[in-house]
Image (cartoon, rainbow, N blue to C red; front, top):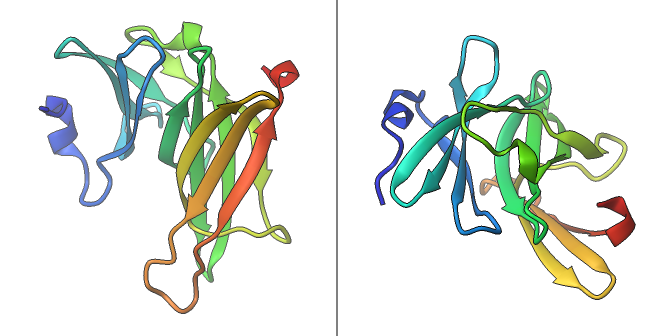
Length: 163
């Protein structure tokens, strides 16, 4: 698979960070640090070998780390913030399926924010699983082989009434 041509302009370790298959079979791709002049980051939808550009606006100081599609077409986006001295926070947003159109600037609705004193780590992965009780959401952190970080797996339930 080819990557969007503009992705080659991304800073080192700041290119494509999030990728999910949408309910209709298209791919959603979001960069981590490839910024537009308005502070949003580059994003694309890949449909039948054709890239359509759009953008995603993370919260101030946050970077996209992953995303996952829901059965109803919405997308959950995981964002992470790091400030010196190891202070981490994360947020989970939902982007409505109707917003995933060419040229759109996506800004997710915040569903969850993790900050100290809660268990917060370098959250970089998200997965979802549909159950009879709703959608199970799993987020995972990466310890980067550092003795100062941990690998955590958190699990949440998004009930049908939350959609």
